[in-house]
Length: 499
Image (tube, rainbow, N blue to C red; front, side, top):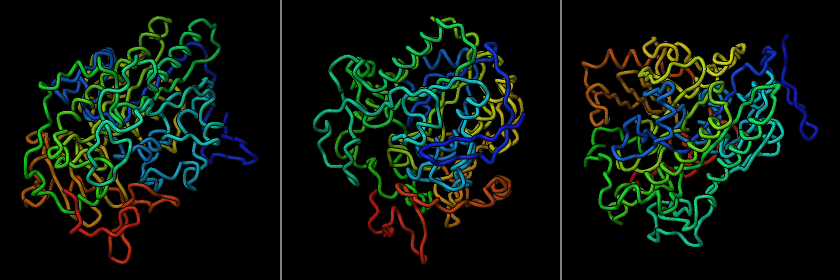
């Protein structure tokens, strides 16, 4: 039976142009718990991204499922990454590259069938709490995307004044802060409340005779700035023992100048600022502490599944929307096409998934949508652009048809295969890194003639077309006009670059 999604909100009819089949689900269909973290790079125990990080709960999830060790975001920024995951479409297709617009405000995506909508139309009861879509859920989204909504989550509580008082080097954003806060128990923090709501739903579901499976989305804000959490998580990482990321002086000497345009003027400070203000150790420590706090909230959700007898028939997927620099390439934050910004944790566990395995095949967050449809035996949504990871969930060594592609503003793309990262910028400049020999991406090989064939092969995967910025685009937006590059509507003057 064919369906077209039809929704009426405030007198507006939304009809999807994507046809799909409705499946008659029963209580035997697997449930889904869809857990997101914000700004989490590969600093989790099982990915060995940092030698000191403590993430016992994410690690135990990986140990009972499949970990993709080479998974990458389709955009190195929250909104476009999440739109891509939830719509199954690339930024180069939608034109959504910045923190605005919302997907329902864009012609290309206003009628798209999102992942939770697809499951709802196939008999699933859907729940959302915390940050799943980008923050600030609109009334239209609240009425259409999920059936049940919990706390939105956020960055609270916050102190009345910033802990870090030194003015930042670019934008003195109040969220760019780190330190011990609050002094009270974790329970007053937004992410704790998000986990509590999710646990309460699982406790209720565990009591019911269920007619339908459920899709529960749980979005944690940490380790997104501000890097606040209580003292006990900082105590895991003593101040005088924190190991800093490798960031050799002069690493950018062989990097095209155009790379600066992708992170021209940001709230996040440069490494030079952290060193000058003696805050590098403190920021790294705070990032580690907030990761461990977030991991504990993941553990509470996993424990609730166990306690309610739901684990055996529930697929859990854990992901982060993009990575984060902590000094590598002389910067902090995201907004790059390098490994620290694109590489993310991606874990699947549950029925139909190999246990305790790791796949090094390139994977995309875009693949979550079709993979979950495969795992739940739902018909394909032919509109989505990802490839199901089902072959790798059955056999971690199964071949993969294509590399992972990340885009940040039109014309800037990264191609990540199992061995290589190839970057081509909008001005034609390039980077090439051999991850078998240079996992830190310190040596750009793009200008060496002996690698021309490698570049040409990888370049075949560059998007043939990049959609222009969607109407209403703003925040972290780069574009060219009359031969001049603009960052957030201000002309880029290279003499004013803050390094």
